[in-house]
Amino acid sequence: MPHSWKETFSRYRDIRLLWIFLMGCSSGFPFVLIGSSLSGWLADAGTSRADIGLLGTVATVYAINFLWAPLVDRVKLPLVGRLGQRRGWIFTTQILMLLFVLLISTVDPASNLVLAGALALGIAASSATQDVAIDAFRIDQFARHEKEKLPPAAAMAIIGWWTGYSWPGYLAFVQADRIGWNGVYLLMAGIILLLMLFTLIVREPVTSRDLLQEQADRRYQQELHSSKIVAWLMVTVVEPFAEFFRKNGIKVALMLMLFIFLFKVGEAFLGRMSIVFYKEVGFSNEQIGEYTKMFGWFVTVSFTLLGSAFNTRFGVVRGLLLGGVAMASSNLMFAVIAAVGPVEWLLVLTLIVDNFTTAFSTVAFVSFLTLLTGRAFSATQYALLASLGNLSRTTLAGLSGYSVDWLGSWERFFIVTALMVLPSLLMLWTLRHRFDAIAVDADNK
Image 1 (cartoon, rainbow, N blue to C red):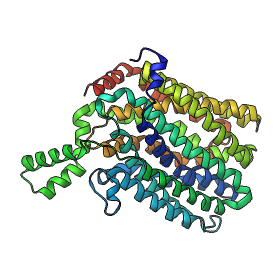
Image 2: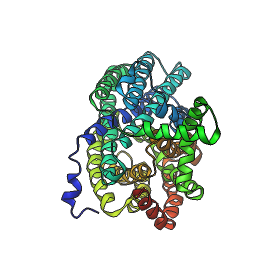
Image 3: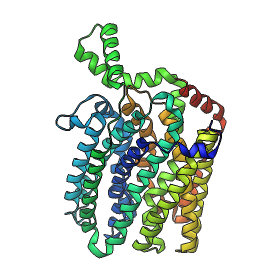
Image 4: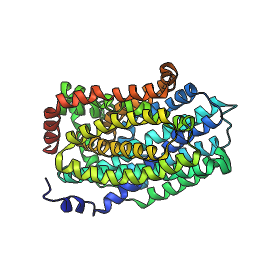
């Protein structure tokens, strides 16, 4: 544990954290395309709340990207392979995203919602694959003995994510009424080109991944008396998951997976409907851009740095508890806005609490998942864990529009989303000592 706050923040003087920040920007940006901007575009086009919620389920691919994550760990891509295993995959997915964004910029969702949804799915699938490579890029930057770097690395990834999400998102909503949403997506294609430049600038991490994978290949050949091809397939498809359960034990592994799934269910429901809510309650596109994107970015960056220091000094379990309580509180504050209308100062206060939630809970969450990830298959194992959180965020939250309609009011909807946080908080409090032990155990491996 660091002896002072000064020592804690001094750990940010590492060039690798800048690279993680830049890749974080690339990770956050696609959510502008398939999240807030798409919701705003569909709302302005007169699409129903139910359809907007359902179309958001294209992000379900984030919940299943662990299925093809082994390819990101093991397959070396031609041509771009010279960039390295991680950067090669990142650059390729960015090319695909650029293509899909250029195509969707020519579509009118009011008359062709299915095509818009198909192209949004293409963006989401490319982005979900990019996330696998970016998470592995971040994890591979630091050796196991550099565990004190994990909260700062998580913080820079989060700050990068929110920078890539908030600034382009602000630009999208500010320009939407002037150049139209089709023009906005064309503008977003230019931002992808900038992100591709970031990929060329950062350095590929140096790891012992290839050696560890070769050792696993030889072990499978000997144990199964199989050919190199069969061993390669077993190591690629089976070993990343087998190692995770073997390292943590089946009971602990399942317990972790359940907690990860439950923790952000309420936040996911709120996030899917937030833009629709802002519009229906009376906020303009420009206000949405200024408050939820620009102001939200400044608040998130500030609290993320503080959250990183807090989690470093006091542990991830306390960070998760504090973030979970704040998560429920911010959802209740949205219910107040629904009752009183578009009051700007109340929105500001709500966003402060909401972004505090994001900072403390996410830094702890990412740090904890990273500690549980092995070095030979970092892409696959982190994708497995993160996908569980994404499963609730993308799949179940697809019912958010129907939930608002069924509950009959925004106030009741936000109260229910606040209550959704309670099961995971109860689980975390009950198992807090076990979770602390898991973190310490992972540190020592």
